[in-house]
Length: 112
Length: 115
Image 1: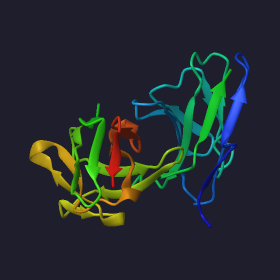
Image 2: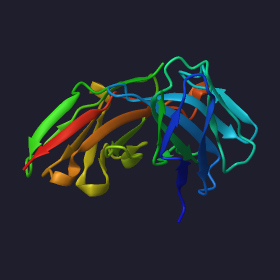
Image 3: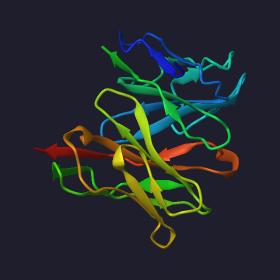
């Protein structure tokens, strides 16, 4: 089955620790995206990548970092510099043609 | 920059009633528009999309949306709502230019269905 996987589904970390969220896709999509979702605020774009070894900041990139070493993988690191990291994080991918984005199931991060 | 407004934060309908969720966008060129649905704690699923052509777009699960350029709107409709339609709905517009490929989402509309 083709799709996007995110792991883990729930993640707990202590304040001050960096944490990496996994995102893998087997849809052969060139573009991948990370969004943050908070209640009542919709989805806000953190980072996106349209090709391996290249990525761009989205609207709320501060306190986050990404890498794109492989086409299939786009991990997101939430650093200790992120002031309010507790949120639901969604990964998506798309072709470069129509940008119909396919979403993973999400990771809920709670920082204690 | 593009933007999307969903004026209704929460809508409640009875099962079997008709539904219309509003979406207004701001974008200088011809927009690419999307409606997504999200069940609690899940990812988003695409309901339908508009790129060009016929302004009435059919989607999955019996949903349709109409693009009205004069009103900058892309409202989602369903003639008869089922209890399983209870979810959060997001409208989105695709950017162009140097931000090619980015989607800008509205704040979402939560749909509650009463039996």
